[in-house]
Structures are given as structure tokens and as C-alpha cells.
Picture 1 (spheres, helix red, strand yellow):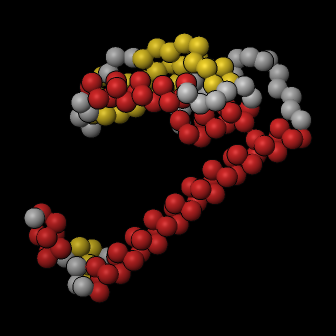
Picture 2 (spheres, one colour; picture 1 turned 120 degrees about the vertical axis):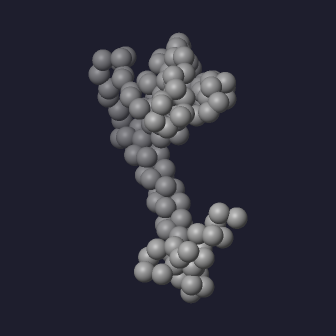
Length: 145
């Protein structure tokens, strides 16, 4: 799999990538076979460093692989072995349950953040800090402070 990261400073980015991979390796049923971390390169536009790692892992099963994908968010995944996947109904159920649980978790977070945002906008509107959907000059000056 390929894992990409952005950050600053350069050393912090490399430390974060190594920590990320160490956490992955500590997941039950996962073993990192090999890893190559690129040298960080500065993105002129964002002024952030970018690096990526190519990681080869062994997983005990598809549920564990799905957990890794959901929790570590690689940008690319390739299964090289076995050449063909077969699973029992129980394994398929476990796989889909893991996926659904994580999706429900994300949905709950999004709904809570949406509720908080709407509440904050209402409070700011009620207090005259937002008019016609835009920050007032008073609000902008408070933000600068």
C-alpha cells in the first residue's frame, strides 16, 4: 500500500510517518514485511513537506485488512497474494460489519459537527456577528485579536 502525509517541519513529518507505520504494525493480525519512506519534498504552494511510504504487509484475514484500510487510510492498496479470495458467510458478515460500524461512527461524527456548526452560526447571527451569511466587520476585528 501507499501512504501519503503532509506536514511541517520535515523531521516532524518523518517522525509522524514512522509512528503511523509502527501503530499499523502493532495491530493484531498485521505484520509489516517491508517499508520504504521517501525523502520529504517541499510543496511550494502549500509550504508543507510531503512524503509517502510504500508498505508491504501481511494480514491474517480480510477483516483485518479492512480495519487497516479504514484506520490508516492508504491512498492505494494492491493485494498480491493470494491470487484468489474466497470467504465463508461468517467472514463476509464480519467484513461487512466492520465496514458498517466504521461508517456509522463517521456518520455520527459528521452529524455532531454539523449540529455544532449550525448552533454556532445561529449564536453568531443572533449576536450580530453574521449578517446575510457573512461575517460582519465587528466579527472580523474580534477574530484578528
